Image 1 (tube, helix red, strand yellow):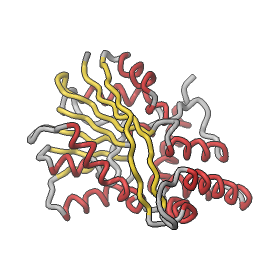
Image 2: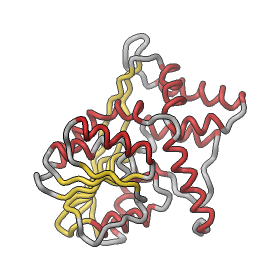
Image 3: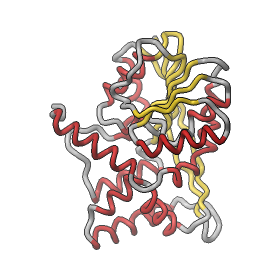
Length: 272
C-alpha cells in the first residue's frame, strides 16, 4: 500500500527542509576526494552529456565537468545548489544546477549518456519511480552509476540508530536498501536493465574526537539536526551517546582524531 498523495507531498516538504537545515557543505567537503575517485572510475568521455541526480553541493558533478563532460546537476535543496554553483564558478566550470525532483525529472527520453547519483537518489521515497526516471532519461547505450550506503556499513548503522529514536514514516522502504546487491538488481531488472555492483570503502578523516564529530553532524548535517530537534533532553542525550559510541568503535585514527571507513555499494546499470 502506497503513501497517499497529500501525505507524500508533506513528506517531500519535510525532506527538503531536513536537507536544507544546517550547512551540508561542512559535511560534504569530507566526501570530495571520493567523488573524484568515483568519477575517475566511470571514465566519462569528454563532450558526453551527464546528469547528476540529487547532486548536493556538486561532489560528483564538478569532477565530471573537470573531465570535459556537459553536466547538469539537480537537487531538491536550494541552498546546496547555491553552494554547488559557487564551487563550479570558483573553478571556472560550466555546470547547470537546477532545483528538481529525482522522481519527476524534467528531461526527455534518452537525453544523457550517463546518469549518476552519489549518496543522493537513494533518499527519494519511491525507489520504483527513481528507477523509472533514471532509466528513462539515459540513452540505451549509456549507463547509470550510483553510490549507495550499505545497511551494514558505518553510515547504515548511523541511520539505524537514528531510526530507533525517531522511526521513519510507515510504508516507506529504507534508503539503505539501495545498498543491497539483490535489491538493486531486482529494481533495475523490472525495467530491463542489468547491474554490476562493487562494495567500496570511503575513508573519513576528521580532525576531531568522536564526540566532536557527533557535534559536527548535529550542527551541520540537516537530517541529524532535525532529528535532535524533535527529541526531548533525555532522547537527545541518548542519541548523542549512541552515535558517539558508533564513531568511537569504528575509529582507526590517533588520539583526538576520528578516522573511519564507511562502506558503500557502487552500482553500474546498463540496458540489458
